[in-house]
Length: 87
Image (cartoon, rainbow, N blue to C red):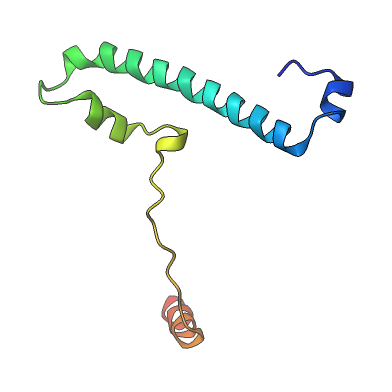
């Protein structure tokens, strides 16, 4: 990241957070470039209906990750039943 120790120690938490977010965005952009290059390399060998958006669904990047999975909440009784079935 190119910070000297005294610069790092003088940073506020919000500055550090912005620095990390910028670093992550830079990594995501590099990965997007690699993904697009790979798509162009493999596209002649795939079906014509295979689009870049479907390729992006196969290879999601950082901020594109799907977060719509809901945790399953079990009661104590359901948890015990599940454990008993596994034994």
